[in-house]
Image 1 (cartoon, helix red, strand yellow):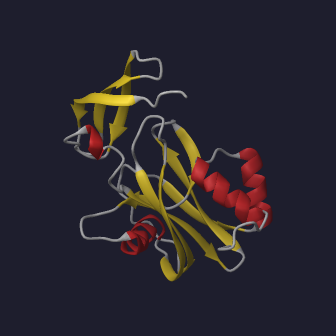
Image 2 (cartoon, helix red, strand yellow; image 1 turned 90 degrees about the horizontal axis):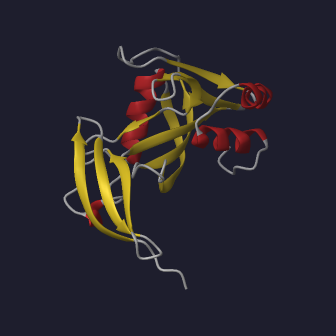
Length: 191
């Protein structure tokens, strides 16, 4: 049986307000040393802390027969992508509170009904321990912009046909792509 990699130690190599870089020292499956780099939203005191704290929420919103998607300029890929409204949980918030706040900040909309809160999942476990809830919700209201100078977000409601065309022609985040696909094909019991 193959051995499981063992995390021996970690060192913080960069500390900014939103991201912390860590170098991890592993013993790999062959018993050799492996140096691995990762980023986190959190200050970790020990290797056991990695992947244990929830970072945020993504909102899978619908209004009647339409899905809510946000066209965003993402600096990390230097282009526009379609995404779900999402953001960091603030101290004292639960998943539902965070979903309501982030939805309003990014779109001006309100949640009219929470359909489900999925357990937290990792966004990009190959290089980060970002762990987020997905909240499925019915939403309504008028679009308005409450974002800061560092965000460019254009929310919109899309029919199944419009969303199918977007999937063919536009870049998506993986979570938004999967939720949009399940919306189009009606394979998601929440949509």
